[in-house]
View (spheres, rainbow, N blue to C red):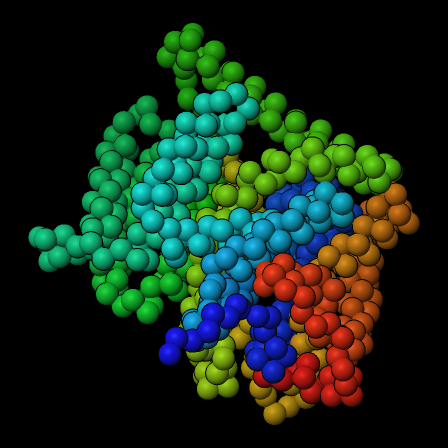
Length: 545
């Protein structure tokens, strides 16, 4: 007899994985530690590092956040998002229920939340990023070649329409996601050369050509130093990825984590290499052979100067609006910039997709559901991930403080940023592992479980943080824009303590946070029960593994 068709329903409290809620709560603290600076500084300055004017205790706070917090916690949230995806998929498979339609509604709802959050509360929103990346994850896991190619062709054609050039970026993103899908799901092999995977063979051939071309470029005076360095570096990276693919592609179960780590490391390895090239090779301005070439050089320099000035102007305008402007003016400013923000998310998705795949693997491999059985793995990740990951950022900070005379990247900023970002992956895995080790320890450290309700209401608490901070700091609220970094940390402490206490209070009476309830209602297209009938048993339900 066939099973009756049943739809996917919201997860019950006793089906939750407690460690994920605790890690999610921990990550929320880190997100606010990072975001609070940009409630007191223009979002346009994001990624610009520590301002040169910061001194004393404020400098130490900025240094700590920059190298122990920045980049680590959106990475953790990305891992958690991938884990949530895998949990939802696994539950659907076990119950033989539909998955794609509810998940697409989930993505759409998240995109709407993110757009509203960006426009009405905070320009540093990341929810839209996750929505775009979640859609990209579906392309990687389920996309068919013919439809991916058709979508690319339509985007390329549409890109020639006036004011639609952003479609070219989407086409590039689709090409990347399609390649990732091929790597993850493709089984095509060469008939010769030992029958390696076709994609591995292609990467190795292109990589070898890059290495040969890179060596040859050193004998061509017309090739700029960037090309002489980056061509062989790119060739080496592609050849290495192709070789590793050839060696490991047969292990299907491990493909998601290998692809996730590979995507992340490849991207930031290239960024680090480019920064190192700028830092270590002295700047020798090329001498133009003709008047036309000299004119072109001048035009390029003028264009770069114009772009730098435009960024400064935008930051100055944003600072003036946030510190003194009306709410309507700030909303209008954010709304005008939102389309550009949304279009750029496809590029960011190429990084986030790697973290989603890695997080998904942690769940599909049973590691998070049986965290206690995998404590040795978490111990290793914490022991090596934190010192290696944080250490790379600290090395970068020392490089940035010791410029090389004549270097084009005199402050070493891009080199330092590359090392910082490259180290964020092992550091974030180490942080997650440390929290799990604390949770399952026999010492008072297991009181970290107090973060579980805070993490269960992650979406509500994330948006509420923006509501509180925008009201407290911006000019249309209490007007405390631009307070010191030390005072910002005090603000974070007060808000986090309040939210942890409120989360315990709320979840002792209700099953979900307000936005979590709405998100589930849209996802499963049903009205989940909200109020707990017997609040006396709520604490046990809230901490059920």
